[in-house]
Amino acid sequence: MKSRVQDPEEDRGPGPDEWGRDPSVRAMRQVFASMEAAQKQFIRTLGISPVDLRLRRWRERALGAFDASWARSARSGLELSETEAGTLYVHCLGKIMVRDGVDVPAGVLPESEKLRKILKEVFP
Image: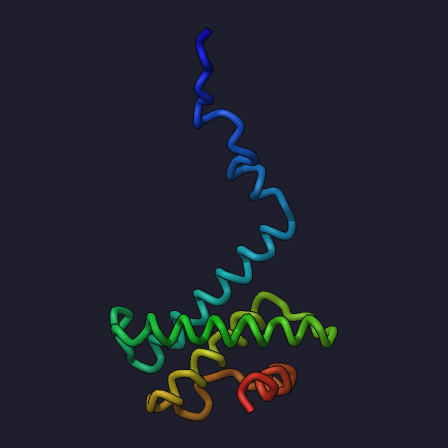
């Protein structure tokens, strides 16, 4: 009796088009796009090369701080727009970079009382 080997192309679950129709997936993609755009502008404004080897470490640490910040804001009932999420991420990245001795001039990061309250809990 022959055993049937399952075709790996068979039953892979939802394809990219199906995921793209999910409102929560679309919302998260918009958040990530906002984070990426804000980060790119921030790095350019500071005059840091996009291939600077320190960026990987800073990004990893900033993402951890961003996750904690976003979770705290969600628990406290604060909703963030895609733009605010991107700005929150860049604030986290900026704080991480400052801790490593990078000069982030005042006025480079957008001011937001809402984000300042969230960040105070993660960066006391």
